[in-house]
Length: 463
Ligand code: ARG
Image (tube, rainbow, N blue to C red; front, side):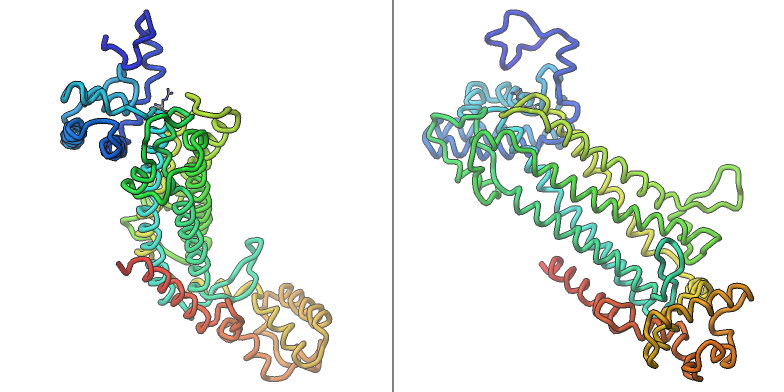
C-alpha cells in the first residue's frame, strides 16, 4: 500500500474500507485541469515572492505540464490510495521531479485548493450553457417569425381563453430563457473571486500574493475572508438554482409539446428523428425527448436539494461533508448540457400545423371577451356586457353554435347595440391582430419581441 501524503502522524495504514469510503478520485478526477492550472499559478506566485526558488518553479511547471498532457492522452491512472485529484497530481509530480514537487504545497491547503478547482470548473461551464441557450433563442425566433399570424387558442386553466398567435406563445419562452441567461451571467460575476491563499482556513504566515494568483487565474479579486474562502459553496448553489429554474421552464415547454403533438391537439408534429416508436404499438410516435427533459428536471432539482441539505448544518470552516458537493453539481451541469441542445433541435425541426390551431381557436368562445368589449365600446358598462355575452355563450353551447353563427337578429334580441360590424369585431384574426397593447400578440408586438431577443443574442455572439 502506498504511503499517504499525510501519513506522518499515523502509526497504522488506513483500513481498505475507509480508503475507498474516503476517496473522491472516482469523481473529482474531472477537476484535473483546474487542479493543474491552479497549482501552476500557485507555484509561479511562490517563486515571484521568493518563497521557493525559480529553479523549483521551472521544474514544477514542467512536471505539471507533462502530467496534464499525459492525463489528456489517457496515460495516467489515478488511485484511491491517493484519495483525491489534488493528492494524485501532487504524488505524480513528486514521482516525476522529486523534491521540487514536495515544495508545491507550501502555503496552501487542499481546502483552498478544492475550493479553487471546483469554482473554476463551475465557472467554466456557464459559457457553455449560455451558448446552448442562445442557440435555443435563435431557434425560437426563427420559428416565431413563421407563425406571427397563426391564430391559436391561448389558455388559462387549460381552458381556451383568448386568441393569440403561435409566435406569441413561443416568444413567452424566449423571454423566460432570456432571464435564465442573465441569471447565469449574474452568478458568474458574483462567483469570480479567488479562494486560493485562504490556506486550510486561516491564511498563512508566508508572504503570499493573493492578487497575483487571482489575476493569473482570471478572477476579479481574492476572496476577502479566508474562512469564507474555504467554506463557501454559494456559487455552486446559485448555479444549480439557476439551472433548476431553467429546467422548470424547459419542463413546462415540454409538457406543452407533449400535448400539442397528441391526437387530441395535433398542433404540431415532431420530426421522426426526434421521436421514438413503441415496441408493440405500430402506430405510436412518442415525444420521448420532451418527456425526458420534463423527467430530468426532477433530477436537477434533486441535485440542488442535495447540496443545500449538505451545507445547512456544517460549521466553519471546511468539513469533509463538503466533498459531497461535486457529484450533484457535475450531474446538474451534465444533465442541462445534454437537455438543451436536443431540445433546440426538436423545436427547430418540428412541423407546425396552423390549420389545427385555427380550428381549435374556432371552438371555445375565445372571442367572448371581444364580444363584451364590442358592447362596452358602444356604451354598455363592461359588467353588463359581460353578463349579456355570457348568456349568448350559454345559448350557443346549448345549440352547438359559435358566437359567429348567431344571426344579427338573434344578437339584437339580447342587445340592440349589436350591429353588422360585430362580426368583424369577433373575427378571430381581428381579435388577435387588434391586441396591440405592449407585449400583446399583434404582429407589431411579436415583431418587437423577436427583434429584442435577436439583439440580445447578437450582443452575446458578436465576438
Ligand atoms: N477531496 C476533498 C474534497 O473534495 C478535498 C479537500 C480535503 N480536505 C481535507 N481537509 N480533508 O472536499
